[in-house]
Image 1 (cartoon, rainbow, N blue to C red):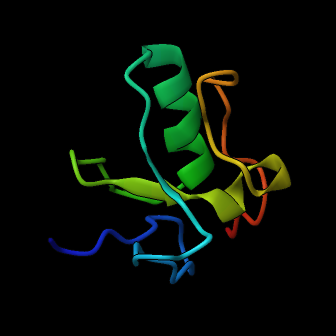
Image 2: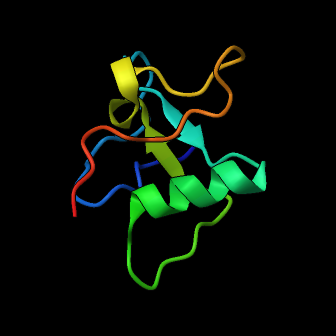
Amino acid sequence: MGRFYCCMPECHNYSISGNIITLHKLPTKESVRRAWILAISRKNWKPTAYTRVCSEHFLDGVGPNSVHRNKIPTDNLTQ
């Protein structure tokens, strides 16, 4: 299985077994998905099925889960 990398600018986190950092797919709910894309803020970029955002970009280091499905990346955003 290949590695997934965080798509945030200047972030170098990737998936690895045993890592405490988790990677999250973009949500399917359109309004939340648009908010994620705005937070990622990359020029001339379109997400793919392999696009991931790591848990370091979410409040408290915890990404979306069954309780908070509509979380948006707000921490450690670089411009």
